[in-house]
Structures are given as structure tokens and as C-alpha cells.
Image (cartoon, rainbow, N blue to C red; front, side, top):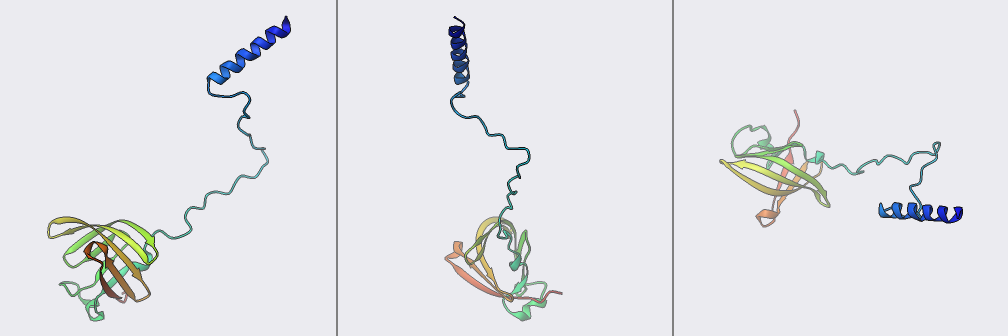
Length: 147
């Protein structure tokens, strides 16, 4: 009789555990040994996600580098801004692509807000911008000397 009571109790316990979504026949979580080494921390992305090689002042012609006003002046790229003649853009997102970086810009020009995508690639002294939203128009710039 005691065996029958134990069997009934075990079956009841198994049914109660199964009703909670836990199968008593499945192994539970594995508890690591207290002296076991911890897994390495996630190092994060290995590639830089910023566009640091684009930073600086860039002009269509080197002679324009000294100009501070008017259409014949340099554009300026920072980590958060893309500034040019008659427009001022916030860099909303920057992501690496095969040819350099794709920048998503939110611009203010002549009282209007616009959004635009620019693909940029730079070497030490040359910057190439292409505008997929403008039928792929491309513009080349020269790096201005830093002061």
C-alpha cells in the first residue's frame, strides 16, 4: 500500500510540474562549476563604425580652402555634421559600405528640411561624394590643410 501511495504522489508531482510547462524527464538548466572560467566578453564590432577618414574641410579646388564665405568655399564634415554652402546637414546615420561610408543626412537649406543619402570615400587628400538620390551624381574634393 505504501508503494501505491508513493507512486500516486510521484505521478501527482509529475503532473503538477508538467502543467507548469516543465517536463520532469527533460534535464534542467546546467549549473556551471564554481571554478570554471567565464566565457570571454563580447568584444563588439571589430570594424570602426564611424567615418573618421572623411573628417575635415574639403574644397573643389585647393585655392578655395582659404575662403570662409560664398559658394567657392570648402565643405566641412564632422562626426555629426555635413556643412556646405547654403546647406547645413545633421548626419543621422553613418554605415560602412564597400566603397567607404553611406551617410544619411537631414538637411536645412533655404528654410526647407530635406533628407538625402550620400556615399563618400576618401584617401589622404581626395574625397569622392556620390548622390544616389540625384541620379548618381558624383563630386570630387581636395582636402584642405588643417590649421
